[in-house]
Length: 244
Image 1 (cartoon, one colour):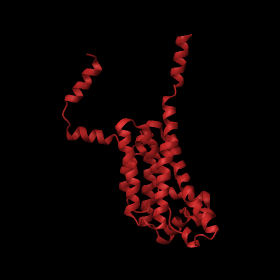
Image 2 (cartoon, one colour; image 1 turned 60 degrees about the horizontal axis):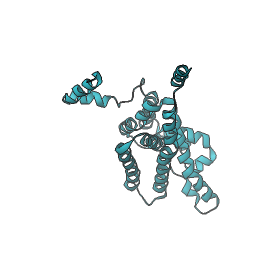
Image 3 (cartoon, helix red, strand yellow; image 1 turned 90 degrees about the vertical axis):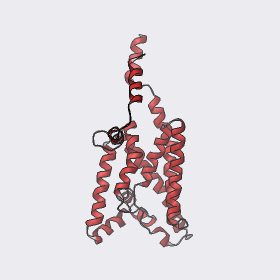
Image 4 (cartoon, helix red, strand yellow; image 1 turned 135 degrees about the vertical axis):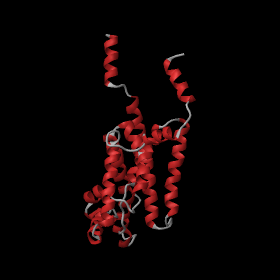
């Protein structure tokens, strides 16, 4: 019996204590060292949430108006709204987002790194926003929809979150991937039905969430998997030396 096998048997025979369970759960908590992007983003969201709670209402309302990616604002100031809309939460549920980020964003960052995770997150935020709001802009310009249809507060991090979640789901394997996929799809549907499902805002949010989730799943997932399977430069060097 090898030493690794003996260690596995010892671990299997050890009872699960509250302390060991807490230590296992602590691995998912975002930290500056292991998940700098996830941790830093949550700190920024905490700051903006506190600003909304304790700041001057007139000032914060103006900031939110400038940051919203509704059709009218996106047409007038596209770069500003796209860059700043993901810095705000629509409510005071910051602790909930800590759990959400720890479940999806953090694990992806530990697997692919902070820079790639940020790229996945923000690309999904931009793509899903444009995919839902540009058609509204076109319909308003064609006078199919009234101008008021393009004025609503559109802020939040959900598009980026669902993109990272979709990418992470693809990187899983076996039954875990299937369970995660079903959970993600049900979460998208639950958010929709828990609001006013027949309103235009809810339909747009549903389409945005679905677009972001499947963009992460079908676009980023395969690319990240291929990158993981690609031979590392050090391994290639070792193989060439061995062949030589």
